[in-house]
Length: 217
Image (cartoon, rainbow, N blue to C red):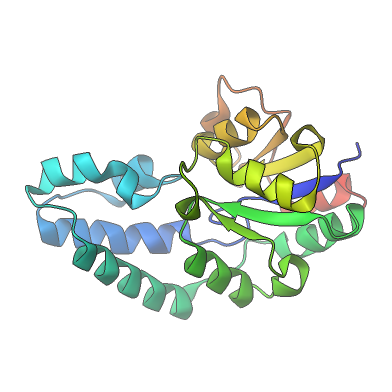
């Protein structure tokens, strides 16, 4: 199958950042009075910006979600990411294959803040493939599950969204890609694929080498 562009989510797709980020978030929420297990924290927050759950955080902690708290979270998160972040297995090869397949028309479209995404792509050695084609839902009126970040990426690439392949690992992100009109493939390294139940994703795959192979890598 031929696509004119490939649009990647970042966290959980290109880099294995979710356990790190959610570990820091769980610790800080615990310190604020909301006790969660790691699994509970990931279930609530993966695929979303922390601010998307502002009302729940404030209700559970009894405290306002302040800009100072968010800055402290970003600082602790980034420190851990710089020390521990790894690329997803095979992701660099899949990005390279996508770059060849589309003659350079690839982008990263994330719900995370842009400085974090840029840092992670640099750490994973993928910057030469993405260059300035990095988009954040924080910079747009609406983040995922709304399609804005994928539409922005497709517009920048001058590609019809219906000719784009979106690679996502969460239901929230998959809904964003589908709402944009793109073909969505669900990446599920754990193998169960239940995150995409009820969603018309075109394919669920476990290993990044499957993506590279499908695109001629």
